[in-house]
Image (cartoon, rainbow, N blue to C red; front, side, top):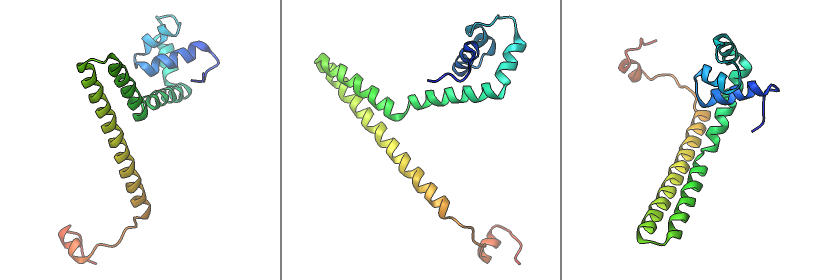
Length: 141
């Protein structure tokens, strides 16, 4: 993760603010004195800080993507299988099943999203028919 601010305390404030919305805690965690509410408010409301916090949160969200979760589940399944006990093997099978289901849901969501986006691109409005106008109580022209 690249640093956005030259001032390390501002960057630390942005990092802390991205984790928790409590400005004063973020201020203290970043190394500022804990008695400056004005500084916390001013820093948190600056456009640069808002952009940096949004970027940090976006990076964190991408790190917890579906593929990341699937990999974590697969790693846990490998560890459970390595134990070799009947219970561990059952746990491993369950984790692999969860990983497969998660991947399938993500693929379905991607397919539905692309279909909806394509439909939105092709959609053009058409005038109402007389039957639709009367059903919607619209005045006839």
